[in-house]
Length: 113
Image (cartoon, rainbow, N blue to C red; front, side, top):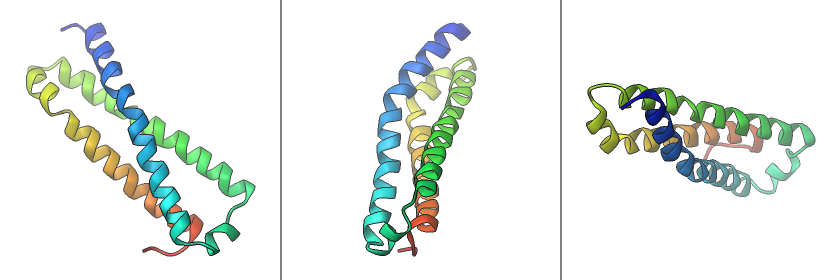
């Protein structure tokens, strides 16, 4: 497999999963906001919303790190194994991002549950 094919394959794989990744992060933040009502409502300001936007963009930049791992693994001798198991990187990365979203949103909206 050449680099162009590996990159095209990575884009096809990861971009289909980006929506689910963002939905997971949105659900985590929404649950934390809801659980901490009515106090969380008092913490919402323009600065909070701007910070959430910045964090969402940074989370999507971090998501792109999967491309580096994916393309490198596809170009290695472990390609066959990688193509069968890369879903684990997606799952672990999404869980990790969800945990980070949980801790950041507790800082914005209140207590840890």
